[in-house]
Image 1 (tube, rainbow, N blue to C red):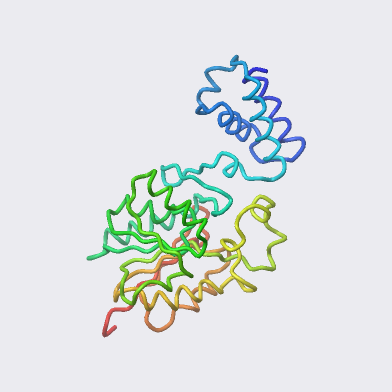
Image 2 (cartoon, one colour):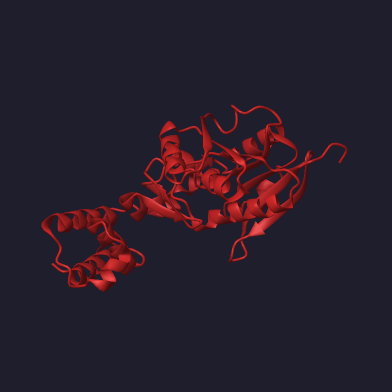
Length: 283
């Protein structure tokens, strides 16, 4: 079995048996993982003969993908903001949309007089905390209620040489009042009633506590806004990723004590991030 034949058969299997999106690319990623090579190797060595062990691994990866297991959980890797993060089924897979949180934070950090302490609430793989620590040089903390997720995040921080302090707690309950300059979060925001409509890769494989907020989808937003008012210093910023059609509901949470609320759209023009500033004294 050559690389060329393995890719042809794998892509056909993924497309015909499970209607997997981008079947050829998925087959390339899985075969490269089985060979312990980069994808570029496949293009330059189509005649490579797979060993029995390589074929067994490739077959197992294809079977797992056909069962709905996300490719990232099979390979254990996902790129985010130009860096490779390890992922397991204990953490949400980092999405490109979440890079808007990073971009918004960097923009605000450039214009701020003092952002030296950053907190990532519900850190999952640690992609936000690690990225912002490396991009800004600010001291970074990250919290999660899941010890398993914190283990993944801490491993990513070590691998990427990002000094981040990790804390096991419910949202930001372990953090002192007026202790942070910037809080970021990609919180759970899917209403429980929408579970059936999710892709099976998401619904059946990603951690439920990282996806579902409660009956309305705003339960975690409410808690984040309320406690961020305690943890942020005056003039500090709260940045959160938004779910689809959540702008109106989230906007209602920002009343007294907040100013300069900024809604950041994604490339499709859909509000994807909200940034709100803790009011300064006298304002």
